[in-house]
Length: 168
Image 1: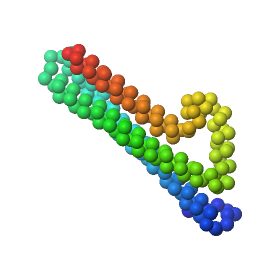
Image 2: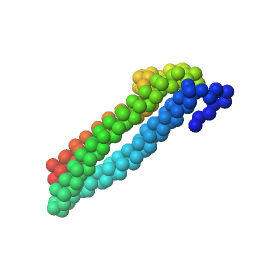
Image 3: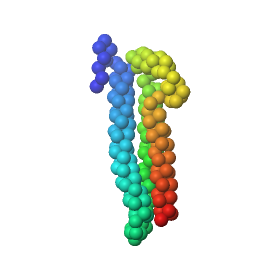
Image 4: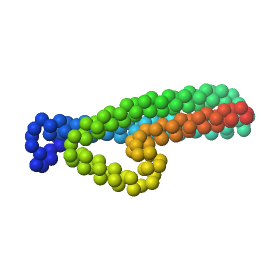
């Protein structure tokens, strides 16, 4: 448990300690999920890009027999990548909401309010926080920016695949 010096061991203090523990648990979940998501996406992107490159290479050579198989496999991987992105976007959003609810409950803790005020003051001095993140924070930017960026990447990969397949 999170024990702060000078705090009286009453029910409110225990509730705040449990909230802090829950908050760190939710934050750890988010960090772990982002790591797993990035690993899975990286593998899918590398394999898909390699297959698109193979398709482009085979379209220039006389070996046209492999093209439909490479095309089909790459389409399946692109669909899997888009699906994985949408699933993780949903899971990240739920986790982000849980963190937000916990933060609201932590506002009853004077220590949390002091930390939050100091962090907010520091963040407001940064232009990118005010403009790009729209004061929503880094977790929000990671969840939405990463997901939208990867959907665009998967779409671009699909376009390159289609161009490579049709140009043969």
